Length: 139
Image (cartoon, rainbow, N blue to C red; front, side, top):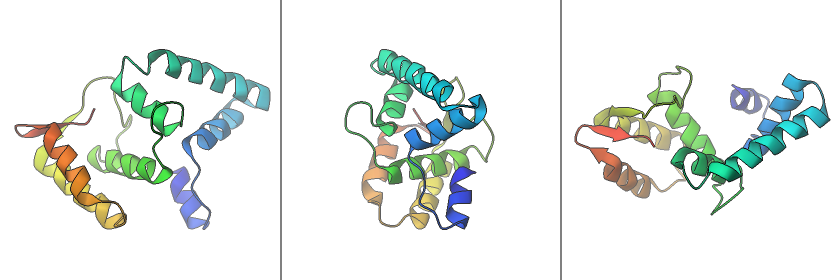
């Protein structure tokens, strides 16, 4: 939703750290509380990023560890999740997400039609590696 507002306003999209700061600033009502919430979030991410793939990926989107993902990667990842989940929340439930492999490949093609500058072949190859039979594990 925030990205859609930015796009309509012809503004650049926020990075994940910028979004999280603004979110906490608005929801908690002040910069000190927002910063405390972010420090707590970062400490938790740092604690668990080696033991959980989702947290490790989140860490990379926050530019906290490993090779950081660019903003374009976050946009593609979130766009794919919204499309795969049909807009249902949460986008990343607490359990594994398995989707029909054919549907997953169609979503990848749709996302790349929206972002043609990304190398399709590499992402499709990675998706095919994750496919087990008729399903793809999104983790």
